[in-house]
Image 1 (cartoon, rainbow, N blue to C red):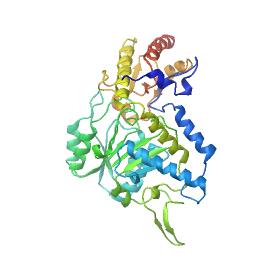
Image 2 (cartoon, rainbow, N blue to C red):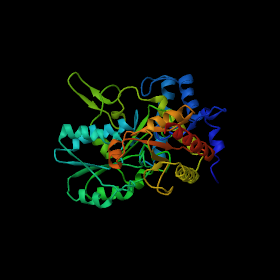
Image 3 (spheres, rainbow, N blue to C red):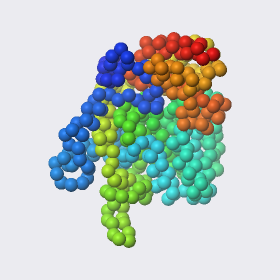
Image 4 (cartoon, rainbow, N blue to C red):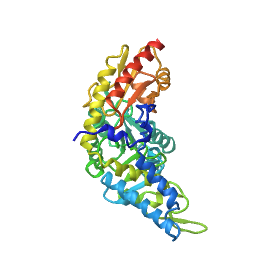
Length: 406
């Protein structure tokens, strides 16, 4: 059955009424369905309390829902155990947790972390910081002009025998390309390296199965999965999490505290110091439950049709160059482009005044933009709530904006 986009849109208050925005910035933050807002509202209205603290009914209910959320997230990505799911405040913190807790303990001077040019700064800066502190090396895979990673370069760097971690995006937030994760993870493991997947862009558009992938770590944020801001997820294999020291110190991450020492608790609690994002975890679980009404096949088929239409329409705009692949089978959910003689900030500003939301800039991917030889791009990104009619309107208004700016 085809995805009923109007049925989807009716579940988002932001799209009600004649002044609804044309929202093409879901790669930054997806809009939030009413079901998620209602789940969080219920927590604050009827059982607001801290978790894993106290014996009263409110905290027991809050704790139950919080841990049920962990199970929901674990099942969503097919984690083997719920305890392999750590709640953080966003994907960035999840990657930093691995860099600090796993990296500080396992990487020595001369060891290598291998990245791709597609990476978001969140999967670059933590490793560069570790480079400064531990004198490790950070090396880069090669890619072609369309954003396809060159497996020969991966093989060559792995062959040096110094790579201890391959940290790779599941989907580019600029070009929309998806690396072959299973092949990269297999090659990394064969070379004795651990693997981390930044699934921030992938998680809302394609099913993720961490056991099938075989990755050691995987990170994502809730707000790109139709959930709330302020909640991130780190998946880590149980044995790795058990070996890692805590990332932060404070309440609830301990087993015992004395005046001169402490012993940490077990994962995941030892990585969740202080009051965790309770309402946000409940909201994320609600977003996952909400998504279950739409089969993955229907979501992917519909979004692929939107991207194909967007590629066709943008290709008709005078003086506009699309970066990356030009077919929907190779691009998922976002397209970036440059317009002759027009800065992306000016274009997105003009369109924003028409209630049309796109992103202009380097999208936290300066190394990728340097590789593409452009300082900035305009990005169109979609969610399952976008429509073909919106794309038609965008094409018309974009041409008007470009004519005005040139």
